[in-house]
Image 1 (cartoon, one colour):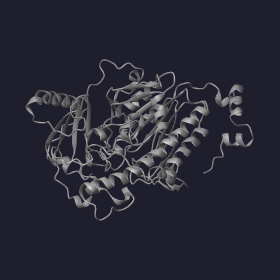
Image 2: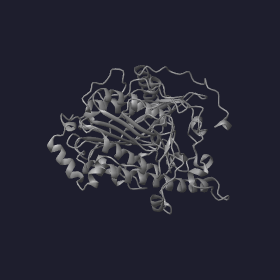
Image 3: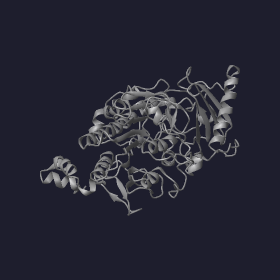
Image 4: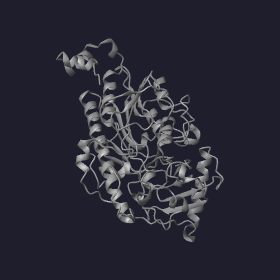
Length: 497
């Protein structure tokens, strides 16, 4: 990869960072009248469950560089996605709107409508330099960016192909491992940006999306490691709704050999097969996470070494959660905690007090208005999220949301999870499966955090459930969502998926 940029030239001339510092003191024209609004570095991975991050209490792995962001800023413990699938979550982050408003409801949607209002467009119109590097996954050409270099589709782990701005949809192959390459490209863009303007940079990794293919260095750390299993790995689903029992996401029956690096011994069946697949897929998954963590360390070091740390907001998140053997599942989609919850860490030295945690309910519609708030830009009235800047300052408003609304539209699609919508408060969760089924589930999250017992229909919870339904329909009205009619989708031919 070529790095013939200004900094490399200075290094070759033996001047390095000292020359850059001197040039600033001399007031070169391109450094005059510099905009002091914060830069925003938005790092996102794909399918990184908070349970696989040591700052969230992982017993499986260590993520020291990701943890740096939490230690130097804030960790949100109740950040949730409102449609747990890759493309729709990304569209929501870009627009600050629910899927039914931005038009990208599922990964089967043809393409994201790039003509609509988006966060990078608003920032760009207000003087920010904008860039998108890495996983895009929205089918249409990225808009609103001064520069982009994105993976086509899911992308590849080794020798990845990219599409560069001005060359859509033609690809060019880059040598190396995708997580390293995305970080290289991110740093190279930072080297060549317009230093006169603040930047908004989306650095989005493919990892740890399946099929998991770690690089050798990180694989060596995990290939023989025993990974602790969740208590409900061998969940038998007796109390689960039909829509959950029929979901094609079980380790025992539905995991592909590519996800485990090969086929299991023929003698393994039932619980033994589930446990074998768990160990083999988790080793690969965690090795991919380890590469992400090392590369985030590279980025954080770059910011510090180049005088960008103090005026740069750094965010780390994932597009949704992921089942890491929880309930015997892999993948996401279902409105269970492991799929619903997004890790979210944010650092802004001197503006966000270090070492904070918050249990305020935040949703991915809130990201766009929060970034606009920090940039001093008025939030458009049609954005459905709300800035949580005050939450990051340790002051959760009294009128902050007490419940969040979720809606998954993706049936029939891979893994055959039925359509459903629901509501979650800090104590309870109510879900309505409505595609080919018509069934409800209610969970007391304080008494049953692993969501093992569906309490819908239990007399002692009748009043709470009725209130939850009222609040659910209020939120649907608030977000201009039409209440669907149950049972309007026939059960699909699963051989097509």
